[in-house]
Image (cartoon, rainbow, N blue to C red; front, side, top):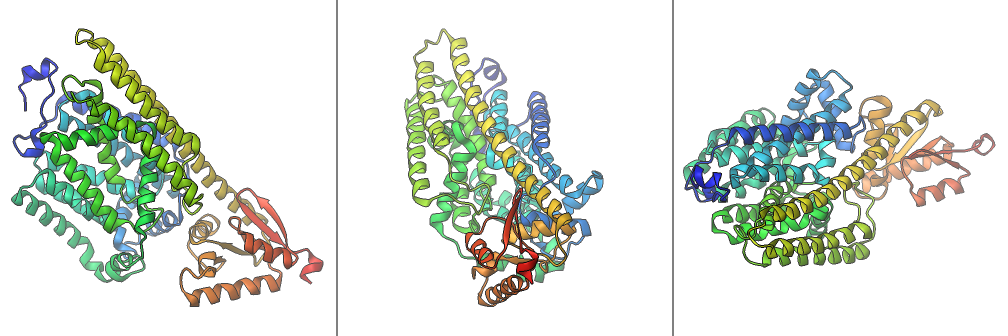
Length: 543
């Protein structure tokens, strides 16, 4: 590290922590800035959350936490424990309580990434940039207002990473083990720890403590953990398309960072070029690659969320290269590479979107729109213009340089945040509309009605209508499509045929053209109730 005198004169402190040369320390100012980031993040995230659940998994977790059941689906046992404690401390309806728990841990994650930015760079302003990039990332924001495992797991991973950088290997191992108990995908981040501090004794301590924490929780429920309904070995055997996985992660990066993407690209170029930062760059890329190959199994699971959080740290370093080129990045490549790559990414994403068509099976994995991709391309051009202006200004005008750099950051960060929160509010509104539609129809329904929808919608119906989990009142369209095997397909089709023949009232939890044609041919009349279709047969037709 440089001396205090150099730091006071504005010189950049060389982040030797990735080469093992020095142990970083946190200043009091950095700690207070992290508190400020936490408070801003908590207000923003808690103000966006509502009491609707994101998906069927959220309903399953809520029901299990409500019962205090830690013996089933133990692959997420630490999440159940955290949720059980949080919902007892916050005595409000459990759905809202779990959403707020994610918001709280999301705000803590923003504070942790700001501390990691200071640890890496020694600059207080970059801690604010890193926290801002995470707080405006749409992938992060959506999961931070949802009762899901991904943000709690990311919080524990970032805590482990911060402790690891500060040479607290046993505590880092405990946090890493706890993150694994929230979601086993935490194990895929081990390359980050191995590359950023390649010290065998520290790595053995990290792995040993993490394994001990995992063993204490897993051994009593080993059979369910490995072979249960959500068992680790069952999940490992699920099919995966790497083409779909690459497209999915590409969408997540574009949708998440939006017009702040040039800062991230600049940071990636910097951490791979600078010897002192190369451990961070290689560790991040290794973690991304391992997670892509071994972690991607489902299109609606943001398994790379911890990687995206660490990319916010890289984005802060990229902003430093953009704002202080005469001290950090003298080569013009730090301007033209991010700018050109942003434009190329936008064009490729537009072509891929057109080829793949719209997706409706995931609220997050919706195809980027033309205006959004135009914004990404425009951000690359703005980045190039502002970066060129900063480089051409003489050294005697530092105030003008800072004004251009920070106004550009404010503009791009503001646009990204507006996009992220508007999009998240829209999704939360749709989820709330679905909840209100289910509750309204449940009051108006005829006795013996039956519900038809895919698994996630059906589980949410159960949660909202009866407060529990039961598949007796609904037919799974995924079963009807044969996605879960021939036996379940035949059973679902038989139930559908019986419902049509008997004239029972039928709800469609979303639009299914083929099923709607069956209903019309059977004499049913469809009526839209918010997000749900109600199909009834007139009395003379039913008779």
